[in-house]
Image (tube, rainbow, N blue to C red; front, side, top):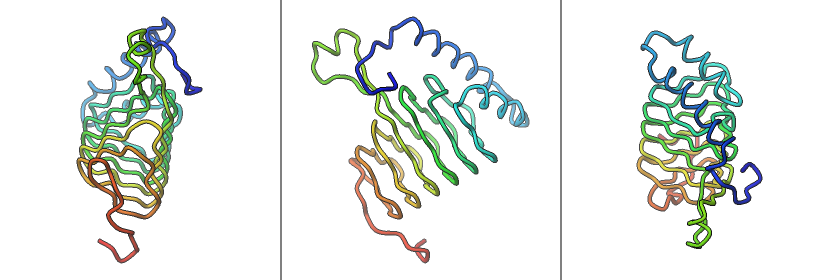
Length: 182
């Protein structure tokens, strides 16, 4: 799965790892608003790495958790979904609006392979100081460069360079960002 080659998600080991993640997510998603310490503990057990001052608002969903690495000063608003069949690397000072979806999973286009239950995964990287606005979908294999903002409702299908504002479906660069840009 982590090599990018085709695999079967129905494999018993993978099913058990997804069940483990769902058990932890159930506890996390059922926390009360003031149970921040419990949330952090659940995330540290679930995720591959969690930086300081990182906060994810419930509900949060992922496949495995251990493929997700999050830097310092991270915030994800409600309903974040990360399908982490491959590595998802999120830098420092990254902010996700509500309903952001990050998908590493992909399926063969050839119906014969797809019908055999085969799938693949491609890693995603979100570099430092990125803001992903609400309702954004990030597709497999994408890197979003540092300092970039992705506009609400965008579907990111290819790499986005650093220090730009990009939006749309498919997501395209709208303009370069400078320090005086609001």
